[in-house]
Length: 141
Image (spheres, rainbow, N blue to C red):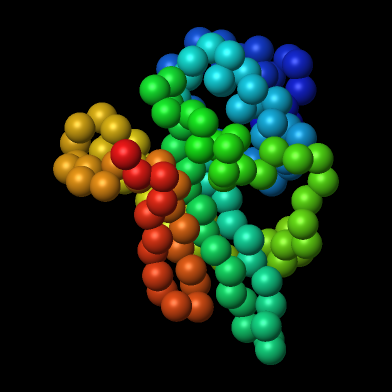
């Protein structure tokens, strides 16, 4: 989905959306529409860079619900500004494992929101650091 008027319109019937968009302008338009209709969503992303011939970076999962949205804007948790910072991911490197991890973390968070999994921290923003194998939860209740 590119975030143009015709396909953003298709989100009007959604009550929950998973976002994985590499275009900040399109992402902003989609987020604005989802917030306007009070739909919950999880946005995933990653920032990958090369260091001495090896890849490192972050995998991000950010959740927004009608009851909890301010962190997205106040803490700039989702990249919404036009343009993008340099990101090795955009060079078409094949990192299916990081994509799978990102998707799995998003689905686990969704299942927490649905009450399937216990959610003690109630995090709305998580970062996985590749080089240190660290998962950090932020924006907790």
